[in-house]
Image (cartoon, rainbow over all chains, first blue to last red; front, side):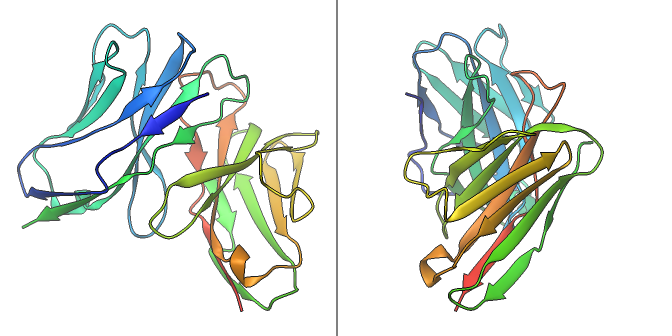
Length: 116
Length: 118
């Protein structure tokens, strides 16, 4: 069965600094996808970045990058040059590609607070 | 980008009544829609998967008679909380997968519905 673990319930970062949010996963499927979403206090889920299990390079999207270590089954999100608007909940999620429903299973989330 | 509209955003109802939540894909056809439930400061828990024109698949522990899901068209899925009780108070959020989406495609989420049962 799939499992996503986020061990940091809360994180603080100083504005303009970089921060790493941890995510580990477990799956028996060799083909899978990992996603990160941001959830502001308003509740909407904002897609940030995707990493496929066979991707050779770490994914990057603007200030977001993914530190993908397949052997360790970790997919940590790195946010560079933090901004006050980055304060939100961040969820790591996984999809087994063998699952034809394409559902996402979410981790418990990390609340990030950016300090001015 | 793909937009998912969810209504209402907030609803308060009395115990024993039923509440319907709508989830619409505005600019794409959603072959599959997912309904999640989120308790305060907790993660999103998948309740059920619905495919257009067929019965929903419920996750273990989710009462199908309590949470009725209908996916009658490629752009609309509804979740009806029947005979709501205070313990059903939660944040419900839908998401949709584009018909042409692949395993690398993210799910598109609605803005959620905060249900309060008094």
